[in-house]
Image (tube, rainbow, N blue to C red; front, side, top):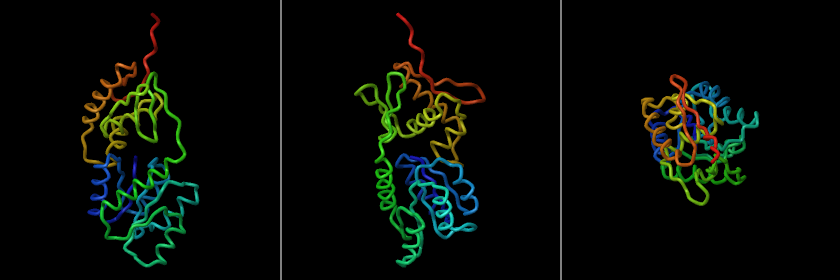
Length: 226
C-alpha cells in the first residue's frame, strides 16, 4: 500500500515512515501544509496520515479540501490535542481515525491495517496477465492455484509496472513507488529488483523489457503456434 504522511515534526515523520516501510508500504513524506495541498491533488496514495498542526495550510483545512473534491481516501489524523471537542471536529471534517500524540507505533500500524481491510471491502477483479492472475486486494500473484511469492519491494515494483498497462515506467517512478518520494536510495537498486522479478515471470511468458534512458515495461509474450 502507498501511504502519504504529512507531519512537520521531521523526527516523528521519519520514525513513522521507517515503521511503515518495514511493513512493506511505500511512503511519501511531506512537512508543510501548502506543499501537501498541492501534492495531495495529484498523488495516488491509498491512505493519508495527516497532522493537524502544520505550517502553512493546517491539517483540518487539507482534510476538508480532500472531501470537498470527493476524495474519499482513508485519513488518520494526528494531533497533540486530547479534548473531545477537537476529536469531534476532526471526525466531522471527514477523518476516518484519530491518534493523539504521543502514541505507540504499534497502535498506528494497527489503525493502518484496520483501514486497509475496510478499504478492501469492495472486491476488485483479478488482473489477468497471460497465464497469471493478480489479486490487487490481497496483493497476491498466482499461476492457477499456485501462489508466486514476491518479496515486498519486488511486489511494489511489479504493482507499479502492472498499473502502467504496458506503458514505460521510469526508474525514478519505480523508485518513488517502492520507497516513497525523496528516499535516499540509488536508482541502480531498481535494476536488481527488475532482474529478480523478470526471472520469476519468465517461465510464464511474461517479461519486463528495458529501453535505455526511458524505463521498463511489463509485457505478455505472444503465444507461438506449435
